[in-house]
Amino acid sequence: MTDYRETLHDNYGQFFKIETMLHEFRTEHQHLVIFENARMGRVMALDGAIQTTEADEFIYHEMLTHVPILAHGSARNILIIGGGDGGMLREVCRHDSVDRITMVEIDQAVVDMCKEYLPNHSSGAYDDPRVNLVIDDGMRFMANCTEKFDVIISDCPDPTGPGEVLFSEGFYQACHRCLTDEGIFVAQNGTPFLQIDEVKTTAKNIQELFADWHFYHAAVPTYIGGSMTFAWAAKNPQLRKQPLDILRQRFAGSGIVTRYYNADIHQAAFALPQYVLQAIGKPSND
Ligand code: SAM
Image (cartoon, rainbow, N blue to C red; front, side, top):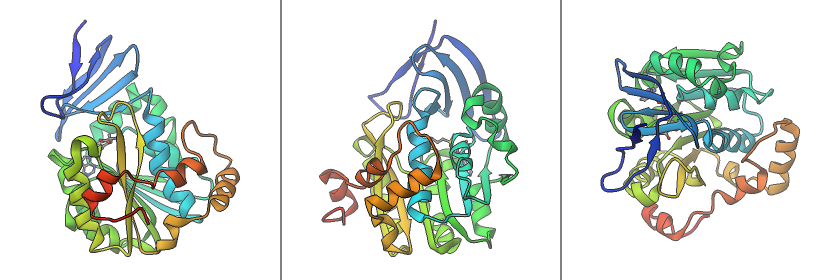
């Protein structure tokens, strides 16, 4: 039995015993691997970086969907950039209040192979009549986009290879342009303990554009290095400060049963530790 060794970080990393190799293929864009691991279930990696595992994907996908959608309160039109494993789409589809979901994924092979080998991630979400799947580069899509969205979720890989452009100033400018006045942008932004430059760069790029910006976080075990940060950017500063009773009402009203997200976690997730505040140049979590 061989091991899968993540190569995302130099000098430090994680490995998974491969019980069964389910799929390995160099797509048009990246090296795709899907395998079975006794502890984490089925695992998908791209270009040597773990993207998602059946065991802990719920934390990541619940925090990048229910936080912005419930903070917004009346989100109808949602955009997902990336997200080819389908987990983000599944969680957005659980909101009956959402009318339209556009998902822009660069790699058809990731969608196809995750449908086949990680069926519980999308769990039929691609068949939801509200869903419009676009196979394209997220940057190209945003550059030509004339639509306005209530929530934009950048479910991007690390800023390497095809994912690099999703951390560019041009991408954030386009997201700002394509958000409604009450719109919210959120994005996967790495684990600051190991990737502090990622939050520094994103903070620099978004603070010039958005009236309100911050980060929130959650620990996702297979995104090694402790808590993963999620970028938050909005035109309306109130949205990040929704009172706990409002969040609790909205969560209860959604009828969604989660395994990680709740209103208390939502509110607490915006409390960043000092080293991250120092990295993003903020004196406090206000
Ligand atoms: N949770 C993962 C993480 O934190 O790294 C991200 C998961 S998701 C699988 C990342 C997706 O982004 C992949 O399906 C990849 O194909 C897609 N992707 C990469 N670059 C892209 C681009 N420029 N436009 C759209 N999708 C892109």
